[in-house]
Length: 130
Image (cartoon, rainbow, N blue to C red; front, top):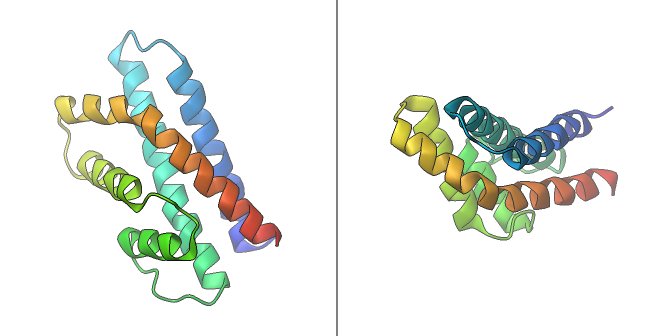
């Protein structure tokens, strides 16, 4: 199994978990925190999958999440670069500081981010299978 297939298989699980978590009523902060964590996993695996697929296709300028997202946009793997940059900002806010208000904003955006994550997954799966 190639590195790309391995990371894409891992990536496939994260948005599914996020979708499942978002399907549950979030009556307590613990469920919201779980959703935020699934979002972070999904985002991390998404940009890292772009990095691995880019490398396997001979693109070497994918050294950071932002560079990988730009590469993915250039390659047509993602359609809405602004949404992905918003996800990057959300991930950075959660990874480097904890503010309950910001966490709730990210929780509120997670369902809006889910289609972009799923679209990238579908696109990368077709890239690797080609």
